[in-house]
Length: 102
Image (cartoon, one colour):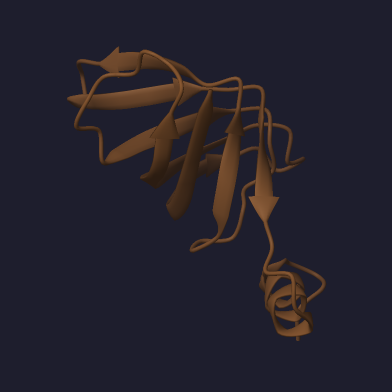
């Protein structure tokens, strides 16, 4: 099971970073019975808000239809942020974090 997303917007995050909701574009979806044709989802779970534009793998995704907003929610166990392997990618990621960047 694999779901990889690109973060488009942070909808909500707890000040202590223990829970967030982000709106994300689906980059890769494979290996389980997920609905077809999904292009974006709301990812909900116990993770600190990732920087907008970052790519992340969703841990233990569970799809749920959200009738109120006519879209898909993905409840998860967490996110793993993918960082470019070169020095520039690591620097760009660190600069995007509060209290670390320039």
